[in-house]
Length: 295
Ligand SMILES: [Zn+2]
Image 1 (cartoon, protein in one colour):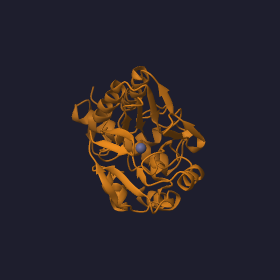
Image 2 (cartoon, rainbow, N blue to C red; image 1 turned 45 degrees about the horizontal axis):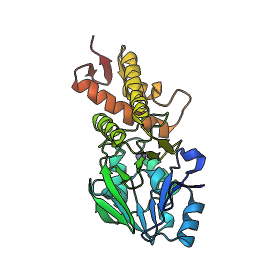
Image 3 (cartoon, rainbow, N blue to C red; image 1 turned 90 degrees about the vertical axis):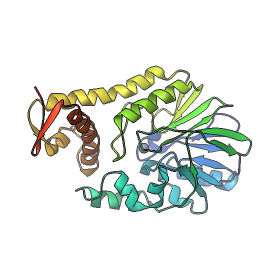
Image 4 (spheres, protein in one colour; image 1 turned 180 degrees about the vertical axis):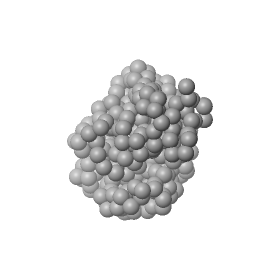
């Protein structure tokens, strides 16, 4: 489904209400046709390409729910930030960014990303830096690099229209993801606050409700509070010594009914970030295979 935010900036809503494995896209009907992310709706994307044109796909970052339909657009040029481009250009780099190389989940994700998500390496023809002006015909935008979710996550501000595309700083009820190898809780907190302070009239995100109008400060704070909730639950669980396997199986992030390697990986990736922070601050200690809070 397409929602016209302005005459030239259109929202393509992702399948399943923009829930994984889909994500919302923007389409700019200018500059030969520009898509920001391509995990929304393959029918709409291919129809727009045919009827309106499509010259460029701007990737907010390298995650699979954002590149889902990129393999269907082999003749369209790809732009991304300098930090995130290498993971779109190489499958091994992509797997490394997820922290999967050598892990027990590597075979599962190799198959998932290459088959279900059809990852194909793409050369990124334009590497975007923070603050850069992007010109799509008459439509001007500013690149805002927001690290934490991925190191080079790109948000796009259209100053004349008061529209900000926040990508995976998605203000969702699930809360933020910072589990990639270069992911960072502190960077993610800073980026989320910085994006809320832009003060855009229309804030568009990649998942769930796509459009958030006006001040998103309270929503950003609620979104970040999931980090504290997860850490509090982990502290509680580490009153007893626990192995990483026990922490994964506790399903602090996703809930106990969620089974299988996809959720195992997600728990491991996010909980590892919390553990690293707690160990560095001396709040928790590691003894062999076991982690526990210090008294
Ligand atoms: Zn993402």
